[in-house]
Image (tube, rainbow, N blue to C red; front, side, top):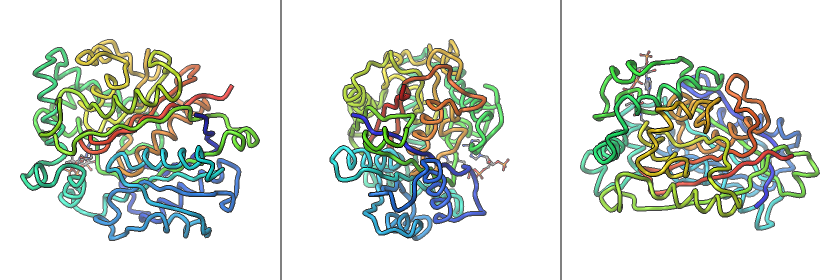
Amino acid sequence: MNVGVLGIGITKFGERWDQGLRELLLDAQVKSIKDANIEAKDIDALYTGNMGGGALSGQLHIGAMATENLNINKPSSRVEGACASGSLALRAGILAIESGEADIVQVNGVEKMTDVSTEQVTTMLMGAGDEELEGFNGLTFPGLYALLANAYMSKYPKLTRDLLAEVSVKNHFHGARNDYCQFRKEINIDVVKNATMVADPLTLFDCSPITDGAASIILASEAKAKELGSKVSIIGSGMGTDSLSLARRNTLTAIPAGKIAADAAYASAGIKASEVNFAEVHDCFTIAEIMAVEALGFAKEGEGYKLYKNKDTYFDGKIPINTSGGLKACGHPVGATGVKQAVEATMQLRGEAKGRQVKDAEIGVTHNVGGSGASAAVHVFKRVK
Ligand code: COA
């Protein structure tokens, strides 16, 4: 697989009371077109990740909004896969190019979450779980991941409370060095442990926040990318799925869909986990990052804690994880997150991640999960030599 990345665009993530859903999307779209040095009319197709437009803003049909924004009439659809919507949109864009249907594709992700109450957002997000078995019985996403954290930490007690908190400390450290982030302050382990309990053992600082934001990326066929001088290629893509509910899951100490996606992405790229220089992973809650590094093959199941004990996951460490600040510090506008990860991977491979740049990065992966692990997508990015 070889699909070029021509341009990237991203809005500031956070409580964006100054912009609505449409304006956030437009801002990211215009930035990626400008960065790619193309015109809107050059785009053959658009895919936009969005989860909560209907429930939170009363706005569906985001595909049409994306083309209206650019005043073009090209094929354009919304892609929904809960918190993995952005990377499923990316995958749809890649497949459109690989099929020969399109030469240039714009992939976007957008979410506007802060205009309504936390209760409304929590109910909307719970649509990503199993409504009959989980939502109806009062479970929330922090609750689901707390169940996973408790199962994992009782089977693998070497993941201590302090090491779990390290995930958040490291992501805030990176976030403080990234100007599109929601939270730009460094914290320590005590801040995480002493914060308000949300769902035991997860405190406020183990949770990703509620966020507004949008991201955009312009993809091109191999030939077009070469002609237009793209500096980054996507060389692998994989997707995995699993049960909607935890009750029907075979394990509570791993997210198997992430491993299925990673194995498929590595196979399509023809690489091994040991060749990856950095990763943007789905840390919707701290425990999810531990499961992600294991799914990606950077540690065996139950041994992810070692990377945090040795501080290997900082931008200048052995395997930098979430140099953007991750979902925890950068924010998690759910439909935009997968595209944001692609933006950060591209910035790293173009050498533009000022203050958090991974030295000599050649291969990076993005790992994005929907729900409690019912869907996951992994993509492999490579610097063009
Ligand atoms: N980390 C750190 N600080 C946070 C935060 C987070 N995750 N979420 C909110 N804050 C801060 C706010 O900035 C605010 O600070 P201030 O008083 O200095 O302005 C304060 O905490 C209260 O914010 P508020 O918005 O009232 O928090 P809340 O209690 O309504 O929501 C959560 C907190 C954790 C419940 C909410 O962020 C949440 O549900 N997160 C999970 C989202 C989720 O499930 N996503 C899908 C994952 S699969």
